[in-house]
Image (cartoon, rainbow, N blue to C red; front, side, top):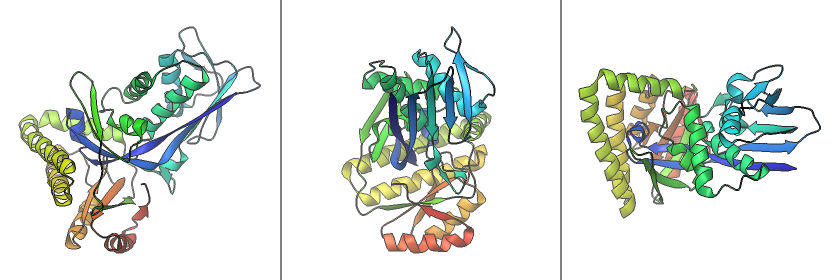
Length: 329
Protein backbone atom coordinates (compact mmCIF):
# COMPACT_ATOMS: atom_id res chain seq x y z
CA UNK A 1 0.00 0.00 0.00
CA UNK A 2 1.22 3.50 -0.85
CA UNK A 3 -0.25 6.97 -0.28
CA UNK A 4 1.14 10.18 -1.75
CA UNK A 5 -0.10 13.70 -0.94
CA UNK A 6 1.01 17.24 -1.73
CA UNK A 7 0.41 20.74 -0.34
CA UNK A 8 1.64 24.05 -1.81
CA UNK A 9 3.67 26.73 -0.14
CA UNK A 10 2.45 30.27 0.43
CA UNK A 11 3.62 33.82 -0.17
CA UNK A 12 2.58 36.67 2.11
CA UNK A 13 1.66 39.59 -0.13
CA UNK A 14 0.61 41.82 2.76
CA UNK A 15 -0.33 41.69 6.43
CA UNK A 16 2.49 39.47 7.69
CA UNK A 17 3.08 40.51 11.30
CA UNK A 18 -0.34 42.07 11.83
CA UNK A 19 -1.86 38.66 11.11
CA UNK A 20 -0.58 37.65 14.55
CA UNK A 21 -2.75 40.44 15.96
CA UNK A 22 -5.90 39.21 14.18
CA UNK A 23 -5.76 41.55 11.18
CA UNK A 24 -6.44 40.51 7.59
CA UNK A 25 -3.57 39.14 5.56
CA UNK A 26 -3.34 38.51 1.83
CA UNK A 27 -1.52 35.38 0.71
CA UNK A 28 -0.66 33.86 -2.65
CA UNK A 29 -0.40 30.13 -3.27
CA UNK A 30 3.06 29.10 -4.49
CA UNK A 31 3.57 26.70 -7.39
CA UNK A 32 5.96 24.61 -5.30
CA UNK A 33 4.69 21.85 -3.05
CA UNK A 34 5.77 19.57 -0.25
CA UNK A 35 5.22 15.88 -0.97
CA UNK A 36 4.54 13.27 1.73
CA UNK A 37 4.68 9.56 0.99
CA UNK A 38 3.63 6.70 3.26
CA UNK A 39 4.19 3.12 2.13
CA UNK A 40 4.37 -0.42 3.48
CA UNK A 41 7.87 -1.87 3.72
CA UNK A 42 9.43 -5.21 4.52
CA UNK A 43 11.03 -4.32 7.84
CA UNK A 44 10.63 -4.99 11.54
CA UNK A 45 10.72 -1.25 12.26
CA UNK A 46 9.35 1.93 10.75
CA UNK A 47 11.49 4.24 8.66
CA UNK A 48 11.59 7.98 8.13
CA UNK A 49 13.41 9.96 5.45
CA UNK A 50 13.46 13.67 4.71
CA UNK A 51 14.84 15.43 1.65
CA UNK A 52 16.45 17.88 4.08
CA UNK A 53 18.61 15.15 5.66
CA UNK A 54 18.72 12.47 2.94
CA UNK A 55 19.18 9.73 5.55
CA UNK A 56 16.92 6.92 6.76
CA UNK A 57 15.99 6.84 10.41
CA UNK A 58 14.46 3.83 12.16
CA UNK A 59 11.80 4.26 14.83
CA UNK A 60 9.12 2.55 16.89
CA UNK A 61 6.30 3.78 19.13
CA UNK A 62 5.73 3.53 22.87
CA UNK A 63 2.32 3.17 24.54
CA UNK A 64 1.79 6.96 24.54
CA UNK A 65 2.11 7.16 20.72
CA UNK A 66 5.50 8.79 21.12
CA UNK A 67 8.18 8.13 18.52
CA UNK A 68 11.31 6.43 19.85
CA UNK A 69 14.25 6.62 17.46
CA UNK A 70 16.23 3.38 17.41
CA UNK A 71 19.74 4.26 16.28
CA UNK A 72 19.89 7.93 15.41
CA UNK A 73 17.54 10.85 16.02
CA UNK A 74 16.81 13.11 13.02
CA UNK A 75 16.23 15.97 15.49
CA UNK A 76 14.39 18.90 13.85
CA UNK A 77 13.76 16.95 10.64
CA UNK A 78 11.59 14.43 12.47
CA UNK A 79 9.53 16.86 14.54
CA UNK A 80 6.53 16.94 12.19
CA UNK A 81 6.35 13.15 12.13
CA UNK A 82 6.50 12.99 15.92
CA UNK A 83 3.77 15.61 16.36
CA UNK A 84 1.48 14.15 13.69
CA UNK A 85 1.66 10.56 14.97
CA UNK A 86 0.88 11.59 18.54
CA UNK A 87 -1.85 14.07 17.61
CA UNK A 88 -3.62 11.77 15.16
CA UNK A 89 -3.11 8.70 17.31
CA UNK A 90 -1.87 6.40 14.55
CA UNK A 91 0.33 3.39 15.18
CA UNK A 92 2.49 2.55 12.16
CA UNK A 93 3.80 -0.98 11.76
CA UNK A 94 6.50 -1.55 9.14
CA UNK A 95 5.78 1.74 7.36
CA UNK A 96 8.06 4.24 5.70
CA UNK A 97 7.35 7.98 5.88
CA UNK A 98 9.01 10.31 3.38
CA UNK A 99 8.84 14.12 3.40
CA UNK A 100 10.15 15.86 0.29
CA UNK A 101 10.45 19.64 0.62
CA UNK A 102 13.28 20.01 -1.89
CA UNK A 103 11.28 22.39 -4.11
CA UNK A 104 11.23 24.87 -1.20
CA UNK A 105 14.97 25.43 -1.66
CA UNK A 106 16.81 27.46 -4.28
CA UNK A 107 20.56 27.08 -4.76
CA UNK A 108 20.74 25.25 -1.45
CA UNK A 109 18.95 28.03 0.44
CA UNK A 110 15.46 27.83 1.86
CA UNK A 111 12.81 30.03 0.28
CA UNK A 112 10.39 31.68 2.69
CA UNK A 113 7.23 30.10 1.29
CA UNK A 114 5.99 28.18 4.31
CA UNK A 115 7.42 24.67 4.26
CA UNK A 116 6.14 24.08 7.82
CA UNK A 117 2.53 24.86 6.88
CA UNK A 118 2.71 22.77 3.71
CA UNK A 119 4.20 19.81 5.60
CA UNK A 120 1.48 20.08 8.26
CA UNK A 121 -1.26 19.88 5.64
CA UNK A 122 0.36 17.18 3.50
CA UNK A 123 1.24 14.85 6.40
CA UNK A 124 -2.27 15.16 7.87
CA UNK A 125 -3.86 14.28 4.53
CA UNK A 126 -1.45 11.39 4.01
CA UNK A 127 -2.08 9.85 7.43
CA UNK A 128 -5.83 10.33 7.06
CA UNK A 129 -5.81 8.35 3.82
CA UNK A 130 -3.26 5.71 4.74
CA UNK A 131 -4.66 4.89 8.18
CA UNK A 132 -8.30 5.37 7.08
CA UNK A 133 -9.03 7.92 9.80
CA UNK A 134 -12.10 9.18 7.89
CA UNK A 135 -11.51 12.80 8.84
CA UNK A 136 -13.64 15.33 6.97
CA UNK A 137 -12.10 18.49 5.48
CA UNK A 138 -12.82 20.57 8.55
CA UNK A 139 -11.10 18.07 10.84
CA UNK A 140 -8.15 17.76 8.46
CA UNK A 141 -7.72 21.53 8.54
CA UNK A 142 -8.01 21.59 12.34
CA UNK A 143 -5.37 18.86 12.73
CA UNK A 144 -3.07 20.59 10.23
CA UNK A 145 -3.36 23.80 12.24
CA UNK A 146 -2.65 21.95 15.49
CA UNK A 147 0.45 20.27 14.07
CA UNK A 148 1.69 23.63 12.83
CA UNK A 149 0.87 25.32 16.14
CA UNK A 150 2.82 22.68 18.05
CA UNK A 151 5.78 23.20 15.74
CA UNK A 152 5.72 27.00 16.19
CA UNK A 153 4.99 26.84 19.94
CA UNK A 154 1.69 28.63 19.29
CA UNK A 155 3.40 31.89 18.27
CA UNK A 156 2.24 32.18 14.64
CA UNK A 157 -1.11 33.09 13.11
CA UNK A 158 -1.67 29.81 11.25
CA UNK A 159 -2.88 31.67 8.16
CA UNK A 160 -0.18 30.08 6.02
CA UNK A 161 -1.81 26.71 6.82
CA UNK A 162 -5.10 27.97 5.38
CA UNK A 163 -3.29 29.03 2.22
CA UNK A 164 -1.63 25.61 1.86
CA UNK A 165 -4.89 23.81 2.64
CA UNK A 166 -7.20 25.63 0.22
CA UNK A 167 -4.51 26.31 -2.41
CA UNK A 168 -6.44 29.20 -3.94
CA UNK A 169 -4.26 31.54 -6.07
CA UNK A 170 -5.05 34.44 -3.73
CA UNK A 171 -6.69 34.34 -0.31
CA UNK A 172 -7.55 36.92 2.33
CA UNK A 173 -7.84 35.52 5.84
CA UNK A 174 -7.69 36.38 9.50
CA UNK A 175 -7.66 34.72 12.92
CA UNK A 176 -9.92 36.00 15.69
CA UNK A 177 -9.27 36.01 19.43
CA UNK A 178 -11.36 32.84 19.88
CA UNK A 179 -9.00 31.07 17.40
CA UNK A 180 -11.61 30.87 14.66
CA UNK A 181 -10.64 31.72 11.09
CA UNK A 182 -12.25 33.74 8.33
CA UNK A 183 -11.18 33.59 4.72
CA UNK A 184 -12.31 34.44 1.22
CA UNK A 185 -10.85 34.05 -2.23
CA UNK A 186 -9.54 37.14 -4.03
CA UNK A 187 -8.54 38.06 -7.57
CA UNK A 188 -5.61 40.28 -8.47
CA UNK A 189 -6.45 42.67 -11.33
CA UNK A 190 -4.65 41.96 -14.60
CA UNK A 191 -3.09 45.41 -14.43
CA UNK A 192 -0.98 44.36 -11.44
CA UNK A 193 2.13 42.31 -12.24
CA UNK A 194 4.03 40.50 -9.49
CA UNK A 195 7.49 38.95 -9.65
CA UNK A 196 9.67 37.34 -6.98
CA UNK A 197 13.37 37.48 -6.19
CA UNK A 198 15.42 35.29 -3.87
CA UNK A 199 17.58 37.14 -1.40
CA UNK A 200 21.01 36.15 -0.16
CA UNK A 201 19.80 34.99 3.26
CA UNK A 202 17.49 32.37 4.71
CA UNK A 203 15.51 33.96 7.52
CA UNK A 204 14.76 32.16 10.78
CA UNK A 205 11.02 32.74 11.26
CA UNK A 206 11.13 31.61 14.90
CA UNK A 207 13.80 34.19 15.70
CA UNK A 208 12.01 36.93 13.77
CA UNK A 209 8.74 36.37 15.63
CA UNK A 210 10.65 36.25 18.91
CA UNK A 211 12.15 39.69 18.18
CA UNK A 212 8.71 40.95 17.17
CA UNK A 213 7.15 40.02 20.53
CA UNK A 214 10.16 41.35 22.42
CA UNK A 215 10.06 44.69 20.59
CA UNK A 216 6.31 44.92 20.95
CA UNK A 217 6.66 44.56 24.72
CA UNK A 218 9.50 47.07 24.96
CA UNK A 219 7.73 49.74 22.87
CA UNK A 220 4.11 49.26 23.91
CA UNK A 221 2.84 52.81 23.31
CA UNK A 222 4.49 53.02 19.90
CA UNK A 223 3.17 49.61 18.93
CA UNK A 224 -0.42 50.45 19.88
CA UNK A 225 -0.32 53.52 17.67
CA UNK A 226 1.38 52.04 14.64
CA UNK A 227 -0.51 48.76 14.71
CA UNK A 228 -3.76 50.74 14.58
CA UNK A 229 -2.56 52.48 11.42
CA UNK A 230 -1.37 49.19 9.92
CA UNK A 231 -4.72 47.54 10.59
CA UNK A 232 -6.46 50.47 8.90
CA UNK A 233 -4.26 50.13 5.82
CA UNK A 234 -5.15 46.43 5.63
CA UNK A 235 -8.85 47.30 5.79
CA UNK A 236 -8.26 49.70 2.90
CA UNK A 237 -6.53 46.90 0.99
CA UNK A 238 -9.46 44.57 1.60
CA UNK A 239 -11.89 47.17 0.30
CA UNK A 240 -9.69 47.81 -2.72
CA UNK A 241 -9.77 44.12 -3.62
CA UNK A 242 -13.56 44.10 -3.26
CA UNK A 243 -13.82 47.02 -5.67
CA UNK A 244 -11.14 45.48 -7.94
CA UNK A 245 -9.30 48.80 -8.21
CA UNK A 246 -5.64 48.40 -9.06
CA UNK A 247 -4.46 51.82 -7.92
CA UNK A 248 -6.23 51.46 -4.57
CA UNK A 249 -4.66 48.03 -4.07
CA UNK A 250 -1.16 49.30 -4.83
CA UNK A 251 -1.57 52.36 -2.61
CA UNK A 252 -2.81 50.27 0.31
CA UNK A 253 0.13 47.85 0.00
CA UNK A 254 2.58 50.76 -0.17
CA UNK A 255 0.99 52.39 2.87
CA UNK A 256 1.19 49.17 4.87
CA UNK A 257 4.81 48.59 3.85
CA UNK A 258 5.82 52.14 4.80
CA UNK A 259 4.35 51.55 8.25
CA UNK A 260 6.08 48.16 8.40
CA UNK A 261 9.45 49.84 7.82
CA UNK A 262 8.75 52.26 10.67
CA UNK A 263 7.71 49.43 12.98
CA UNK A 264 10.69 47.34 11.96
CA UNK A 265 13.13 50.18 12.67
CA UNK A 266 11.70 50.79 16.15
CA UNK A 267 11.12 47.18 17.24
CA UNK A 268 14.39 45.92 15.74
CA UNK A 269 12.87 42.85 14.09
CA UNK A 270 15.11 42.80 11.02
CA UNK A 271 12.33 42.50 8.43
CA UNK A 272 14.06 44.93 6.07
CA UNK A 273 17.75 44.17 5.60
CA UNK A 274 20.12 46.77 4.17
CA UNK A 275 19.74 44.98 0.83
CA UNK A 276 15.93 45.19 1.04
CA UNK A 277 16.13 48.92 1.73
CA UNK A 278 18.52 49.43 -1.17
CA UNK A 279 16.29 47.52 -3.61
CA UNK A 280 13.22 49.37 -2.36
CA UNK A 281 14.86 52.72 -3.21
CA UNK A 282 15.97 51.49 -6.63
CA UNK A 283 12.50 50.13 -7.40
CA UNK A 284 10.84 53.41 -6.46
CA UNK A 285 13.11 55.29 -8.88
CA UNK A 286 11.93 52.96 -11.64
CA UNK A 287 8.26 53.42 -10.83
CA UNK A 288 8.08 49.97 -9.26
CA UNK A 289 7.46 48.75 -5.74
CA UNK A 290 9.47 46.27 -3.67
CA UNK A 291 8.80 44.65 -0.31
CA UNK A 292 10.01 41.60 1.63
CA UNK A 293 7.55 38.73 1.94
CA UNK A 294 6.69 36.88 5.12
CA UNK A 295 9.06 37.23 8.05
CA UNK A 296 11.54 39.16 5.90
CA UNK A 297 15.18 39.09 6.89
CA UNK A 298 16.60 39.03 3.37
CA UNK A 299 14.79 35.86 2.34
CA UNK A 300 12.15 36.46 -0.35
CA UNK A 301 11.29 39.73 -2.08
CA UNK A 302 8.27 40.84 -4.09
CA UNK A 303 8.41 43.32 -6.97
CA UNK A 304 5.13 44.86 -8.08
CA UNK A 305 4.48 46.93 -11.19
CA UNK A 306 2.18 47.35 -14.14
CA UNK A 307 4.35 46.00 -16.99
CA UNK A 308 6.12 42.65 -17.16
CA UNK A 309 8.93 44.00 -19.35
CA UNK A 310 9.68 46.80 -16.93
CA UNK A 311 9.89 44.41 -13.98
CA UNK A 312 12.01 41.91 -15.94
CA UNK A 313 14.51 44.63 -16.89
CA UNK A 314 14.71 45.71 -13.25
CA UNK A 315 15.23 42.14 -12.07
CA UNK A 316 18.04 41.69 -14.61
CA UNK A 317 19.80 44.69 -13.10
CA UNK A 318 19.37 43.20 -9.64
CA UNK A 319 21.58 40.30 -10.73
CA UNK A 320 24.50 42.63 -10.05
CA UNK A 321 23.42 42.48 -6.40
CA UNK A 322 23.26 38.68 -6.66
CA UNK A 323 19.46 38.70 -6.48
CA UNK A 324 17.82 36.00 -8.56
CA UNK A 325 14.32 35.95 -10.02
CA UNK A 326 12.31 32.82 -9.19
CA UNK A 327 8.90 31.78 -10.47
CA UNK A 328 6.52 31.00 -7.63
CA UNK A 329 3.05 31.53 -9.16
